[in-house]
Image (cartoon, rainbow, N blue to C red):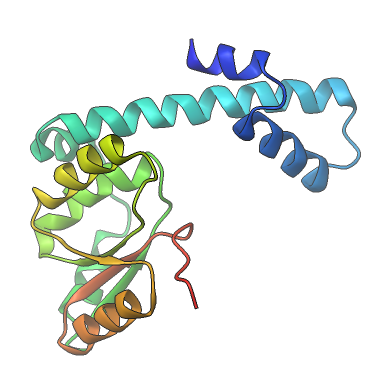
Length: 167
């Protein structure tokens, strides 16, 4: 329903950004092809938001149980055993919410957190992430310092690519 509503409002932020990005990435597509891809993308983005909400609302164990297969687990466990620490860089929406619960099986990471503009949504998301006892740090110079301090102590830190610290 949300995806359909967004698709009807062609100048909405999500739909407009999707159209611009598709035009830049695929300049040879026809308008019809680009329109179809934009609709598919918006639908998948809305599904990803719904999945994230479910992960936030459910106990962390639920998210862990959803993960059926982990590829190259040894690479992660070796990195986490490194006394110099480990840095995890992972996609954000959808994927991160499940991985956040799963990765806590291996310790307590320091994670950059970018507050959400809507105060009620921010509180809900923050509470769901804090129940895992992660150390959440701001996406600014202080947060970057905290990430490196944690790494120097042999811990592990997480960066989400869309959380770019302010200079």
